[in-house]
Image (cartoon, rainbow, N blue to C red; front, side, top):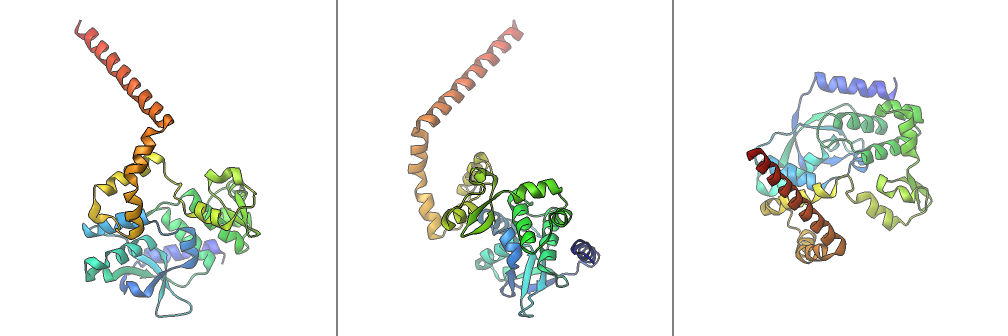
Length: 275
């Protein structure tokens, strides 16, 4: 039976028998391959934790027993939810356990495909970066391009395109995001690659600004660790410097002029209708 057939069988078995149990969060850990493809996103964890405290119900985690320690479990789907429970521990004992569905053991490639397909239907959607991370791990496991394309349900051309997006770090080819396209095929330092890999570039500047505003309006739901407070303390000076920049000033003035012209045009049309 192929990886795809095994994964499809696992999905069918999970859907037909979605029994859940309560597990202590202390016996759960992210599956190494899955957390590499989909790292913990602090913003998402913070939002999940806040929603939980308001009574939101989350889907059960999907876990399998750890092959080296049968008393612990690897989380295949639901790592952001698990992290939210950990964040909420200080609010009550109800966050010390979490609902989970235990599935039959899978190989690493099966875990990657199962999680990729499951996350395509709920939770944090698969980003282009997630697809690249999964794709490259499947390559490392020796899967041919056609097989990878079938596993991820994407075209071979798309697999080939993503496979060509890499830089060389310490002699090893590593996948990159689209904003590093100019470094394609180049040798880069481990430090710069690590910064690139974990920098959140999957959102627009406007959405990032909107999220920051939402967080600032809900201070009790923000992680008040030293690093966060240090960064927030620098915001007033940074915002002042930003709006004093020549290009920003020009953009603000242009938008003000456009708004003024639009208002004048609206007033003109209103007067014409009255006449």
